[in-house]
Length: 333
Image 1 (cartoon, rainbow, N blue to C red):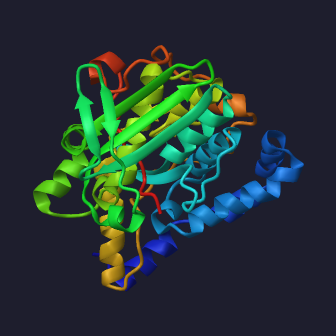
Image 2: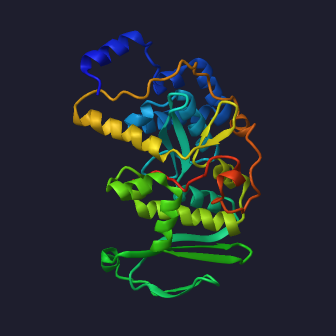
Image 3: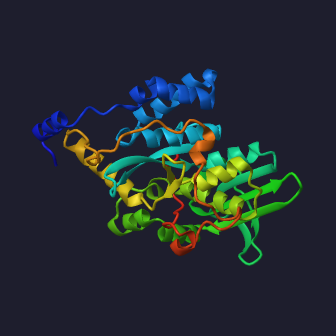
């Protein structure tokens, strides 16, 4: 752990880093913001990004470029980064290869619902936990599900969660529902989240699967439903493809199985707070920060060809030709 003297020495040796407020105040960057979101929305956009960064110390250590690109994509989807609304998140991750900290774009399950409703194709969409005693019947082959809901909400909150239910009905009348018992969801989490598996082994609570399992489970179920059986608008396709990825300067999306990196960021922050020392991010490589692309189209331009819409996201690394794409989301607050 670095001493205060070492921190002071390092600070003298390194040039001062421009914060997100200073970065967004740059005239060229502000011009790009106006070109993308419009002059009327520029102030609101800057305020929302600054607010999201100021409430997260680990996010403050990320490159301004990655934060800006993630926020720009969220704005193009007309979603807000407010943690209270839970529509999308900018998640800090430590890129150990480049020795820099980056912000990963992650859409919340409420964001998926917003995009589904906005598409005009969905008459109804629901995702919920299922409590003990509420399962009437469940056929795992036909995926038929019957429910006996507990109507006393106070009593219902006291009952343990036994599963998760999601359904949608399209305007053309097509209806699809899906139920996963909690055991199935836990197996899915352990398979696709190395951090969650580590938490279970070490009895720690660093991952968001551990901190808010229900919110993570709801997102997983809604992704399964929409990607396999739903109608996906252009906006939904864009969100699906960029979800849990880092937007590079050329517009391509890097999918990273980065939960352990995120854990390391927060563990060091927690240790620094406990010892009343300054949080020091990974020593960055000397990479010049450049403004984000000028248009929304540039943000996603140059991305590699993706799978057909509706294909199950849970594929192997060989099939993706990328690292496995875990169902990972920040904790709903």
